[in-house]
Length: 253
Image (cartoon, rainbow, N blue to C red; front, side):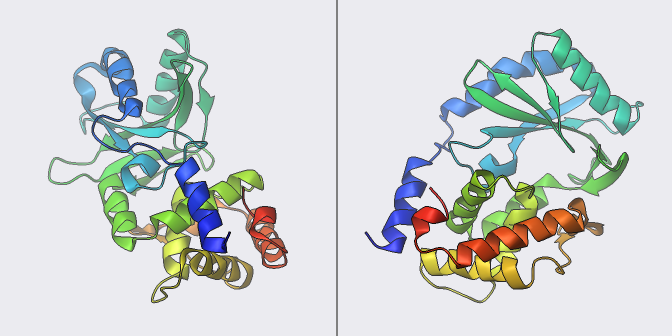
């Protein structure tokens, strides 16, 4: 089996139905009534975002992100919105886990769901204010811009392999940070799947730690600041080990 055959076999194993009839979308029907009860007329929309919307999910990863858009008339602070949603979800029988900008829950014993509450800034576009729990601050973002950017980058297969590698090696590397890094590392380069992934490992080893990664929806939001220097060096060290591996089986499974 060639390197490309091996990686494509993994992608096949990890494939997720992303069509309009995907079983994963059933979580919308389960959670929508609950979210409407929580937000009432403040709720503007609940839409798939994250990996599912960008075409980069893996079966063994978080199944779907739901972006909860609240009206710009919402009076609570973003921190209060986040904590109120956490408490409400827990009071309704779920076991939520706090993450940086999302709240993770398990739905129907089958799907992991990340809930991302945000406040719409105005009705002219899809810009939102989002709470960042680690820094206890907020940032402006536009998830539709993120989706469009990653889809246009065209590196979904490479990103999915690298997400599996990240998870299997226990690395702290947010998905959007990894998606943007993969696009940057492969800009202007078009090899086979294995060659492309290898090139990303080379980038992670040589350039990742010092690279400044900017949110395409907000140039004031520096995505690369989401990791500490120690966490970035852990990613670099793991990439160094991948480049020294004797086989792809040692790198990702």
